[in-house]
Image (tube, rainbow, N blue to C red; front, side, top):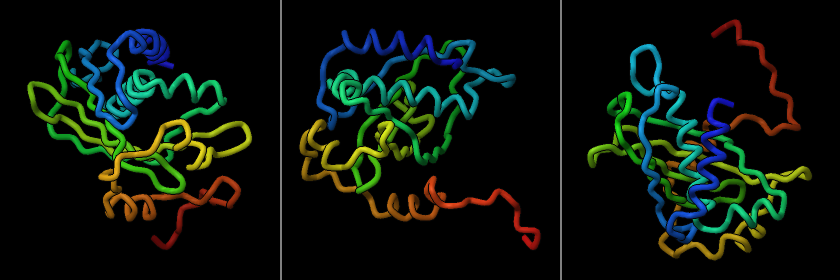
Length: 184
């Protein structure tokens, strides 16, 4: 909810920014706002991932995919993410969220995103997303019909497959007990 107004404003503004293909990298210039920081006066670790949502929305809107997704009733959801931090973004600092799709598998679209300031990477994340409808996940064939054919050099790194497999939770129709293992 804390980024709802900012997201709505971004959806409006991104439609007026230069168009690009969904397979192109996108860069979204921003500034650290008081609502982005924690008591240490820098961007809160959890806020990085929330702000990166804006970068993915920017790419989807500027490529025209967002309108087509909405027309089909598709919604993006994050299924896994991992992030590494290098430097802290400070209050009022200018930075950019760089976003690109790095590949797809049968279940997810994978993004690499970076927070960049002064020509340096401050944080980098990898995000696995799914497109879903009320009826369930959108198939890869349907996604490619809307996104177009990915570039031939778009090959998902092997470590992404390993990360995804090792971090996955059971599907929503499979039990996932919440009890801690008492022997651990």
